[in-house]
Image (cartoon, rainbow, N blue to C red; front, side, top):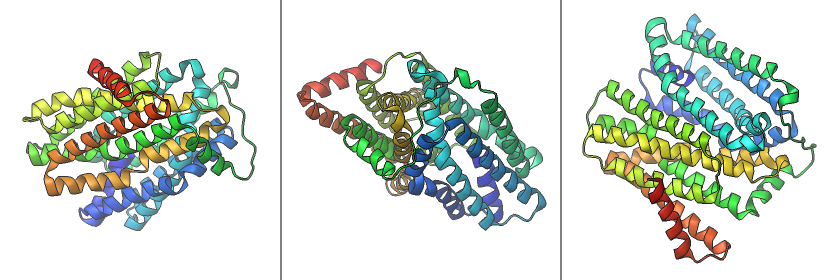
Amino acid sequence: MQRVAQDWLVLELTHNSGTAIGITTGLQFLPLLLFSLWGGMIADRYPKRKVLMVTQAAMGALALILGVLAVTGVVRIWQVYLLAFGLGLATVVDNPTRQSFVVEMVGRDELRNGIALNSAVFNLARITGPALAGLVISVVGTATAFFLNATSYLAVLISLRLMRQSALHPSDRVARAKGQLRAGLIYVRTRPDLLMTMVLVFFIATFGMNFTVTTALMSRSVFHTGAGRFGVASAVFALGALIGALVAARRSRSGMRLLLATALLFGALEVLSGMMPTFWAFLVLLVPTGLAVISFSTAANSTTQLSVAAEMRGRVMGIYMLVFLGGAPLGAPLTGWVAQEFGPRMSLISGGVISVAAAVIVGALLARSRGVPVRSYLRRRTGLARAAA
């Protein structure tokens, strides 16, 4: 709701300036690029539940301020820019803390299920949030959407406060010391499995997971549909992602094999999506594509968290969130440029090809580091991807 209302407010203030929306989004992501590693370090040093209460309260306060500015009519575009940057700063700490707090809520044995259910809730919000924001804005105005968002944080804060400390599985806190940030980077660099996971996540998240851009371009420029059908396409993709999250919640195992198989499957489905001749065929293929992308994301998250030492989890998740989200300011404009120069279909196909190539190269590098014949290793992964399809 916040993103939709914020973008709508920017358009109102700037008379439909796409550049202004780009600046707002860039400012919201900029702290992620600059400070993600420090956010992970904070998650390791301090009690995660208390950190989350601070970050969630800050995010709610920022939504409330923007609502007050909008309803009083004194809001200016520079204020929206500043508040978007502030939201990015809160998110930098909130993201790795929230991700690593999952294991403290459910324990290691249920971590995969916890991560998958978290993805299910997230994708349910992706379906309902924009639709609800559009309804609220059209009926009672943009400011009300900000007020509703601010109020929603009370539910989060009350839930965090009511959690029983005895039912949590807290990890030992890391004492403040010099070199902790560097220690996190060295830890990842010296673990080939972690390093290759980060590389794979970066390429697929940056070049493959741009469906917000590509779905809009395919709907409008290739199939010439209206806003209504574009909304249907977005909801269908989110539905596939929701199904993928629920399927992942039932999965009892994860690891590099599953990660590579889902990466290959996602890349192949993305290529096929770009080749669909009609809007309805494109719509049908969005369901398994959404399923594959969430299966990959859940496998990457759970594989990373289960393979790290508890005292390093916050810093490693800070790096993970950096590579997962930090490429968005690069990937989204590049996807738009490819669509403009070579057509929207090519933007989807190229993203799928890069995803497949990344999975093949990472699989080959891991096979070499483990002394497994590369052809045999890749044959096994390709077979897994076919079986999953």
